[in-house]
Image (tube, rainbow, N blue to C red; front, side, top):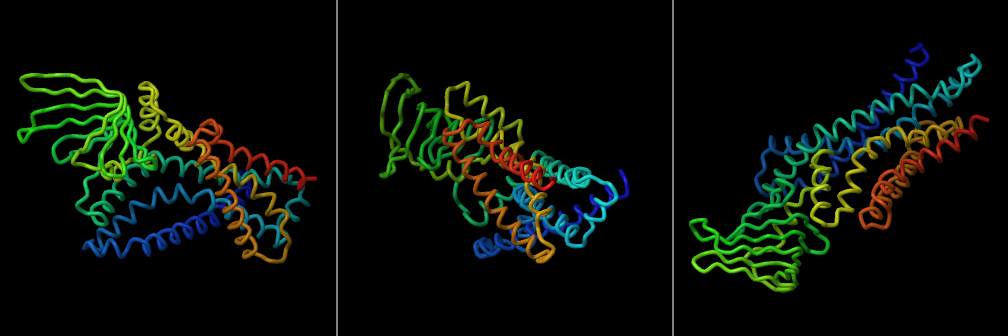
Length: 358
């Protein structure tokens, strides 16, 4: 790596460190304002609060890294433009593409760190943070636990289980209920393809069987039946494990299990592809930021770059959220929904780069 490349690489990393750290602290501050009163109300100690926010850091880093990287590119490049450094570099026979390579390498480093954090640190840290929040913010509530590609919850008189938790529709897929006596001996087992919580608190089960154990065992199939269990849907909603708490392998195994059993997995499949596509946005989105920074006038300085970065970050976030939402609803294929925003950003950046390079 030449002296010029090392210089540009170092300047970008400095800007990236400041921008990502700034967004990280801002995110934590907003979250603290939102949750501090609830945590302190339930007697959470300062050490526990500190540990809660420390475990939030890996997941937040993955979340804000693309915007922080884009803002760092805008600041690093626009400062070089404003100080006429790029003009001097061009006069030395260095091409625009060669100038951009160290910056893209820096973006790739941030992307690799985000991907590593998403796979190694964030899943366990997010689970631990949610456990602290569950204990201190919503104490006393029973929540389902995810294990063996199923959700499990101990109820008042039995064990409830489900393959899929659909919080918006208040329904479950692959539902099972095992009723036990005080000695934990099974009394009956109810299983159904789907279960829906009705407004009056009853459960509507579809395509299922009821098995009664004991001296006179029996099995009865039904197409639609209503039950009143002493447990509500809240425990499953509280315990629903988001994709952010799973590694790529765990989420991939869960999606495969749902497919084998014939359940809908579009939402989880979209999130599976997004686990790879989202960290790579650090590189793809920089291809859009570089031409904007090269076009910036010498007046305005850093504050203009910050304002432009925030505006572009908001626009990119809207495109990404809309694409992922369409993928989860099945309007777009899962693979396309996860990668379409990155392709659009990179394609737009390439087109702008060609116009700047002329």
